Length: 278
Image (tube, rainbow, N blue to C red):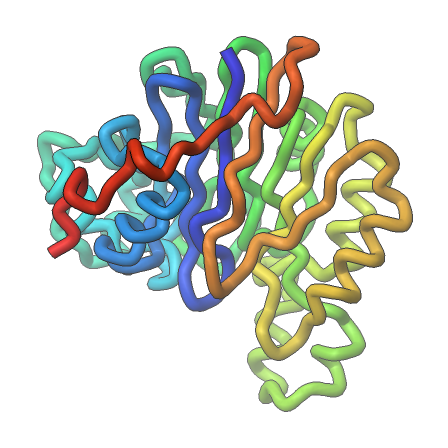
């Protein structure tokens, strides 16, 4: 059994990532409106019925904007730390809300999700890996600095969403006020292109086939620049930019010798009337 994964959106305007197998999936963050997530999943041919749980990394609005409505509408369990929930000020169904702890492993059907703490300027931030049949996809964004926990998990991933938020030169010479530049580079803000590249160069496993560079700054980065940086050293790893404007394609990964284009989408099977978009 393989994993399918996609970025529904990635950036300061909203973050949402889907990872799943043939029968179930999870969302990491819901930073777009419920209606927008529905529209994008429909375009991708991903059934919301397969979503079995939502995992929340932290309480910033670009990660939780649509959470309450989406979870309530589809009666989905939400995994979120107590501190994050308190800071979010969201009203969630208490009977369907579950606490996250560092190094916690959660089983959702045949998916194994690992949550671990990270450095970010939030109440209790987490990163995640999702595993099925010894195939692992990581979601590593909103990270102030690379720590041993991140390195350990990154080394185990066949694919990953990895933050490459800013170009240091663009940020230093850009229009952001001093306090915001300090926040971004503080060690609890975001990863720069250089920091992300260093992690990739020094800790990428030989079997990593996909890297989606994520949460790029609109003002302090250049997608073409970042993609060229990573492609120059990527080897057999496919490098893609997770867009801040639209969903990415759905990628497929398996630990077998199956072809990577096994995923097939027939639009006739996914008509709008299958979803209530209103």
